[in-house]
Length: 335
Image (cartoon, rainbow, N blue to C red; front, side, top):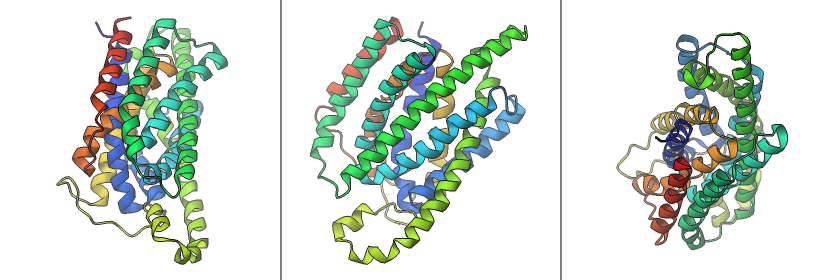
């Protein structure tokens, strides 16, 4: 039988894979800072209803989860949304997901002794190798971007924020488990979605607060720099696609409507609502590095979804990388 934590992490990866292409489209229509804020606001409303009806409201360890969301959603989401228009969906996801997996695994081990078993570490590395094999040909085929280094910097920042957020969430979940056991209820955190919805709401609340602050700062900086846009080259102007306060791009793609709220809703649904909630579920059972390694399959999943939504074509070695990643996942599930 496949472990529950692996199932939850795979669901998270599937959602993240669709989210990347949805994020790019919403960025084109709203700008990266606004797209990030609105997806979190929509998700907060939906998860809030679940948290205060099915869940336990703010829940235990609310401050820790809020901090995890502030770093992961607020800072990490902002950085990822800035990296996407500069790097493209596959490269941005590759850098963020693989780096976050390694950092999360090491950080959880060093911080509170949450170590990864040797078999789990080996199969996780096989999955990450599959991701690299599958996407490296595509990454090499992309022409150098005028702001490639800036995009990589934001992608690395997003990876570090995502890793810290996952590790802190795992630590808070373990503390919640201990508190539940101390109360004598015998309730396991992983046995009920009450804890999952409450933790997801707390994380989103922290993320929305930081995202709103960053939006205001980004708008002010963009307005101050507006005078310099006239001196940008055409290539540099292209690099500014998805800027903070951009004119909506009404181009059609993939037969899907190019309306801001459609893509904001899709981004919120597959990202903070389903994807992150599934990740919290997974973190109840899995070490953060292992959970992030499974989530790192998202870039491979993003290629077919991006082809449908935005017209990307899988690189020739995509199938080889996908096969290697699946073998690593199967080994992890059976180990």
